[in-house]
Image 1 (cartoon, each protein chain N blue to C red):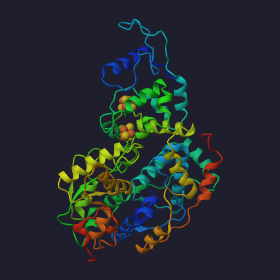
Image 2 (image 1 turned 90 degrees about the vertical axis):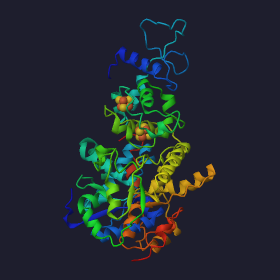
Image 3 (image 1 turned 45 degrees about the horizontal axis):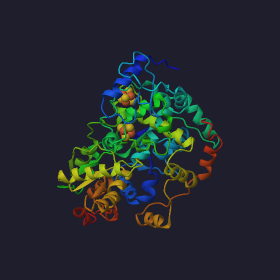
Image 4 (image 1 turned 135 degrees about the horizontal axis):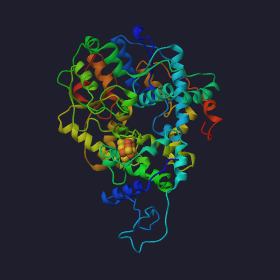
Length: 210
Length: 296
Ligand code: SF4
Ligand code: SF4
């Protein structure tokens, strides 16, 4: 377990409160997503709720156990991944830095859900090009998606497309029209997809993370 | 890397070319043969598998299915040549991950052993455009051009997974690529590099509004920059843009009218294939200036 010094939280607090609209990360609102990890002088915070929500390290453990999930620990919240992110530029809510922050703080309910913003990532990998810490934010997002699927909290689309591969070997279907078209274009017929092999390859260890 | 001196490659066409856009597969097969590549078909490939949903489902399963495909090609000892950016993304990334990480390779090989297969890490995965540029050279490609596409202005669309992650792809500078421009020049066309040339197609988003806003901006940029069409190398981007602009046009009450072409269709036509042979008539938005091309 990496020890996160208090100054790190102050840093996040400053970034989150001074950098304009930051979505729903607010440390001191007393709302459901609030954190009260700042325990120094509470300048200006008099009268705030006494209830403290602490960083959910259990969620980091969970993410650490997923392929590529461990990388989230290296994020130092610089925001270099945001500027050229197409999903961030074309929507209000999406922000890879905030997704990483939510992962670090353990905002599990927001991240692990079929309605989570992670499903708007376009998988373009631009963030991985930009990140100075080699966090590979998109790979962390994929790890978060893997947790959603495991816990049955992914959009139906994900199961539908990936189940199709297990049932027919491909994401699409081979119809008589397709076979005719291939013939018309002088292409060899499609040979049968080895579905049994796929089943054997994947069936036994499913869910054990082997 | 396998011995490339024999010009043999194993084509991995994937779901999209094989079933949705077989005319792309036809254009690839014919145009590459003219340049001198020998494609050695392998039976038993499955979906690569899909880098978006299948990877989102379970990364370890994604590694396993991809490793099975790679192992089939390894049996023949030639590099895999890909013609879909999705297949390129999956097979390249899994190939590199398994080559670099011995522990991961061992875990995946345990799974593969159940179906009597083993991943060895003995071949490379290369997109067809990189094979043309690096193994055969632009001059060899140019030699096969009998009918240069003079005056055809093609707005370049890279798509994400030819270039990124650059750590894996190692094809070109991901922010200032030139490979598609040079290949378009090689067939005599005029490449138009515009401000959104590198924007993603957005197919992976679950919310329609993001890819649709991106699409509107890209199509407007193509038109504003005076291009006759958009040229690309990924069937998913093609689908998103060709059918997508009809759907979006209906929603917005506008007509975009930007023909989308796959690079190997242009290459085929420049080599003397007819518009029909490369399936230009199958597109939703037709490229009128090339439609009348018949066999040279
Ligand atoms: S991969 Fe996802 S998070 Fe990264 S830049 Fe692209 S859309 Fe943004
Ligand atoms: S660029 Fe990397 S370190 Fe910076 S905020 Fe994004 S993920 Fe974190």
